[in-house]
Image 1: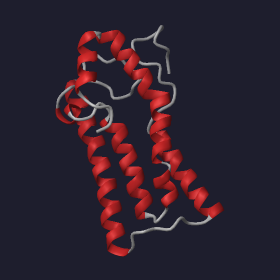
Image 2: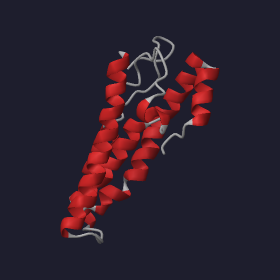
Image 3: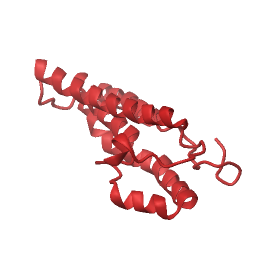
Image 4: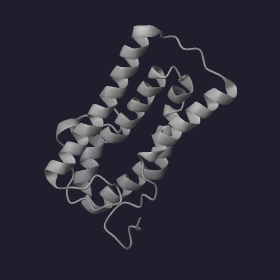
Length: 159
């Protein structure tokens, strides 16, 4: 990816969707090495809860992606942002895709009865914040100034 100096885009150097995928792998590895963490949900309850979270997360990702497509923007954070999207799901969360990734990760962890994966969700969000969100916010504040700062002040980062 290209730096902000050479290109109009945030200095995100690692694709954020890889973070929860890596966390899934780490969760399976931890489960294999250290054994399963006690799962409080079983049977149908586990499938409903895990499936609901995973589908809800996927729905957030798809809703945000649809808004990007409709506005003609590329959702890749290192690409140029011609305008701030503040409609749809972006009225409630500034990062619906990243929120959705974490919810999907938690849902899959529950579905697989692997609470290591669920326990890694905060780590996933910390890594995404460090590698993407803080760079995106700096880029948007520089590019859009007061209009982005007003949006940022009125809409929470997560929920």
